[in-house]
Image (cartoon, rainbow, N blue to C red):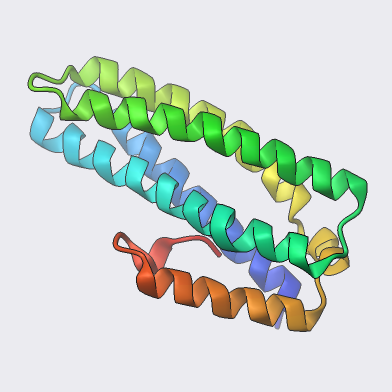
Length: 167
């Protein structure tokens, strides 16, 4: 059995891969009817925004509160915060494109591809920052247990896709 830090990291990676797959499904639907691409777009963008909501409101604050961050950890979290902002803007554009009276599937797919590419770059850095060995340095087992309780509370209150929101 893996240790708690490895399990935490594996959960994060699993969620990231699911978001990537959701965005990829929108890209792949570029020639699909609107009744396929529009709901897929809403789902993918909503999934990414909900996951980042958990990171922004629970995970990152818990890491900061644990008080064991090195200056490199602090700067890495700040960079992830900025990337979240940029990704949220892309998601807003994606949702706006899907909400138009006459949405264009090819345009939606192109925005989804841009979002997916930025997301992939973002998670590569985030997964490096939050790898099990680094997480072990940032949080005690008690901090990690508290984080997971907070994440469960967040998921319980989340209006969308609660089973798939951040690990």
